[in-house]
Image 1 (cartoon, rainbow, N blue to C red):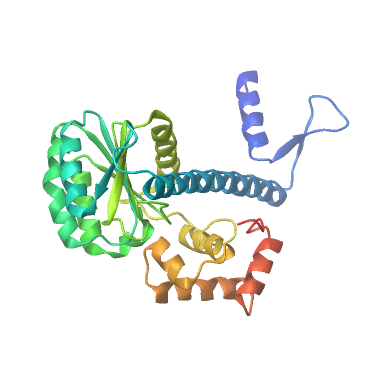
Image 2 (image 1 turned 180 degrees about the vertical axis):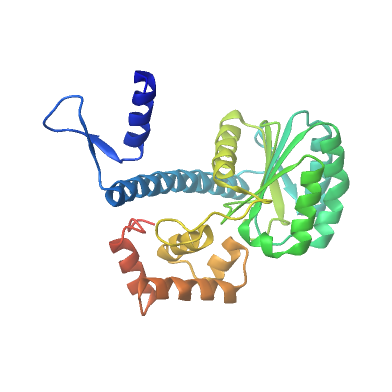
Length: 298
């Protein structure tokens, strides 16, 4: 084997934690027990995912606080980079005007689970016009929409026209970004039809684009199967539910964030308790922390 190939093989084995340098001899490597090496690799991956999730959560909170502060304390049109819209009609009219000026890309976070037939039909002409103009459209839905034939059908229609659709276990806010220069966020996280803010400030857009890109990178294309269970034996949806339960969220709140029914949220919680061998949610939380599944600061 050529030296360059040997070095490449050693680098790969080292990255997989299957070899380590000898403590006694220079330029000598020792094999690592595969079980220990793979467990170390899994641990590193979980730490990376936990750090990424924490970064996404920080960006989400910053975006939510920004929208809330602006809605509560600043009158309409008082800031050059902010425009307030009241009611769903005004929101739709403004979006219709803004998309006419889009040249490159539209990025959308669409939480709330299955989309209504009315909203999907209303969006089709606009989406088709954008895609025919060569605009890149990236949309993130919740994993739970995979159980909605109507939403899946709409997403497939988008994909056939060139749109890109992925799903994630949860989405922090409803968000639409156009050409990375204009963003629309709701003023009320519980009722996105009540009003919205049109944001154009450079700093705000940078943060919102980073939020979208981070979630997009972790998303799964709708045409693909959801991720396999992780090293803990959890699906991505179960892992997200565990994190939310660790934060003390109720079944109703977890259901809303995951886009599922409260009954499904209760079933997921029961399955997690059974997996952890816990008789109560408090005990499940302590056992999850003890196993390293939660940091204790979730």
